[in-house]
Image: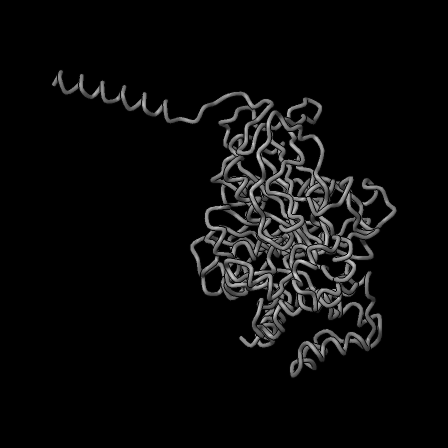
Length: 539
């Protein structure tokens, strides 16, 4: 017995020695930090200088010259310490006075990311949240001050924002681009940039005190739509463990790269049109000709219409057979999406923002309903009438909010029943004092999630735009979001309990003047609208 006890003690000592030797080295988090391409230094922010911030870290090679319209390549290593204290350039895109670029410059050389970390030790292994910006896949940047990661970092998150290519530089397909690809693919370069950023996180985030096994992707608008496409992609397995989609949109213009599918012409047709508009269609090498044009020339030739519903150049992901094998909703309904928990929802008045660009009339609204809903048009006009322009404006806002955002979000939440992971569905209905004319409009929620209120489209200052109710809602939302990132479940003691979504009960969380659980959000309308979306795609 004594001999057995002695052997057992020796075995335990050996095991503890092995465990210690295999444990990750723990050290105080301080500059410089070593990543796969070299050493980086940053800065600290806050009253206590307790949040480390690293800006403008290259996560891929500049996609310029011969690398334009190619998948992102590995970033080149560097010698010495790279000072990462300023944001990299914003992607070249269709910025405007209302949606301007905040980085000092815009450039094709735009594949940079930014990290905020509260970690004290390199071994802290904190949850990681990776933000994907919106902008209709036409513009946007990770350096927008609205996306400042300090407040989420203070809640124990390692926050990452990054840039991806947008507009024709990020989402152009062409038969010759597909031909030069080893995957016979083109058109999803912006999505591939997003995947490259997530691969960088897997390789490097532990050096910032982050846990590569607890990565949450979250985004709004085109960023939320990207979250859905990333969940549907076969290339993203293991790159993230939770997903949050804020106002994803379902476009009836989604297309296949080369086939007439989903009711739309192939995405490559757009590339052929751009080659023609650039005067490159009859060149000996049309792609070389297009790559020789400046980014500004490409953007000018490929300018999309102001009305997001109008025909013309459309920039969004496509089904290419490699990055995406089918439309995301089809993938979700087949249970082939990445099996990770999903938080998804929309705003009560999403379309109010877009009505600022194109004001509807009774006539234009009725024509839209006729063209979109066909044999169900009269039913829609009965539910959402247009007796005059004022009534048409209200109906137009409601129909397009539900058809484009709310009902598809419900469909994605319902389709999560095809995998093991849970879905949590919400509806944002809060209207702050400064937004009474627009309601709970598209992109209003961003300030609540980041705890950084900024007035939109208003001369009011932030403290007049929002009040204490908004601050309390923001605090609750930040708790739900960070709880979900930490554990895959948004709930905690003290918060209104948020039930997982079940299509039978239809329970969801209403984020409004009061946070409460409701059920049955637009059931009849959503059944009609989703059936019509699928019918238009030939499903």
